[in-house]
Image: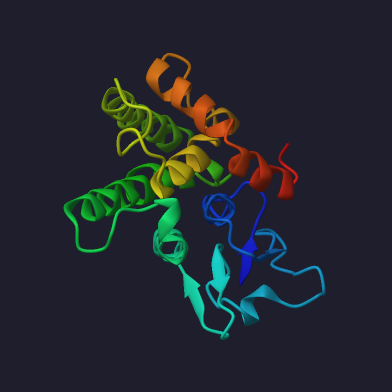
Amino acid sequence: MKLYYSPGACSLSAHIALHEAGLAHEAIPAPTKTHQLPDGTDYYTINPLGYVPMLELDGGERLREGPAIVQYIADQAPEKKLAPANGTLARYQLQSWLNFIGTEVHKGFSPLFNPATPDEVKTSTKEKLANRLKWVDGELAGKQYLMGDAFSVADGYLFTVTNWAPRVGVDIAGLHNLNAYRARIGARPAVQAAMKAEGLI
């Protein structure tokens, strides 16, 4: 498999999932600024939308969208229990978390990375994000991970997007459950391996 990623972007979530699953893969940088691969290929010829992650399977099929990719990865290594079994209520709860992280947190950060976003929009965006993350902090009370005592692909995704908070001025210092959780995720060997592969640590 090939994972197209940009260092520290949302594709880190898929990178973490691949390391957690122990699946052989080639990680190919596809920087979001240049859209040029190391060999000079225009990334738009691989993903016309231009963003990451993109997972290319051994048969040449390509899969887009992080929440779909991480579930695919989890299903390739069921013994690792990175996602509950398909068809179970727990799987739908995982999908609920992936959708929440994708739409309410991940996309919530987007205006803060855009230099053209007016200051008043950035202020209201930060307030909304802070409220969403405060709710997550409450959900983590008494739990090791989002789904309880077991790490899932949703945890890799939440860790990835909350990494952006200090870069754009979203204050999460007072969210003690979230920060303890982030420390647990960040200490995982697979997370360390993915971050080292992307040159983040």
